[in-house]
Image (cartoon, rainbow over all chains, first blue to last red; front, side, top):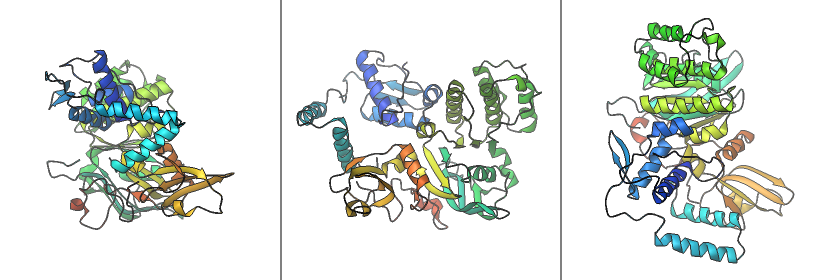
Length: 128
Length: 325
């Protein structure tokens, strides 16, 4: 089982923080195949996070193939042997890292980069 | 949000709702709906009408105008009495009663009483059942009050400032308890709160009021996504044209810097730094600008008599709002 920590000052959507923390827990071996994720009610009790936000994160993780929802039972780390691609080893991540390096060399600071990403995201994902 | 049993998918539906106290209009022309299953924050400055709205939904205050439906039935329908629980800010309990006696009172007064849930809530706070309510701390009393509210198994739980006056630890525990129990029982929650940081993570829906009128209503994520905070240099008088073509909620200048909270219609052109505002920034912007047009998402809007069917589309803004930026 994992426990999530929601940073309310980070500016990152809470559901994305959960997605990221599950991915990290998988990489670090805190979560293994077959493990159950805490229920939305449990996450709510511990972190005061709206249960729908947790469910949104779990749907996202399911979409990434990292977890499976078993109706009426809970959400579990996928056991499928063919480990589905995670965001971490996606080529997109590498390309973004290259892009960040370039932005930094060109003198863009943290907020410039955030603004560009936010603007680009808003353009490509209107009203997620 | 849809209900399989054909019951209303709207926990609260207000149309042209208004309340006059003698000469003062506490709430006016209030049309909003809140879907069943939502955890909805009710925010706004003191005197905005939050408590009056909660009071009307709890049938403590009789509306003077418009209609108010709770799960599809008129608010004054006696059949709905058992469906709603209301917890006032001062959490009124009998101080001489013990915790156990308080729960017994709940059991005697409520036909659908769930002793197990009530006891679970009390026990998870390690409250001694024999303690007198008057001797408990604020956080413990809040827990007993929530046990009483959830023991009733309401479909709609109305809370007026549930976490005000609690210390940070108690507020965290009570907030978590509230969400966990609501998730477990499928309760719709409407809670007024001044703690905007809490509202941002606890509530999936939001209704912001000022001067008795609705300012913002809908899914928290969607309301946030509809706004941008732009900053830049401004050299001319007034709001520059490339900003003014969007809906400007609030703008202010400090020296040569212009900061504006906008609802963009398309991309923001020109040399402006654009960020997504925090919930607090959006709410404060609306509170400071009473003239800014209100924003209701498709889900929160009550339009025409056939809305029950028409409400399905999500992510759609008011007809004059096209959010693309």
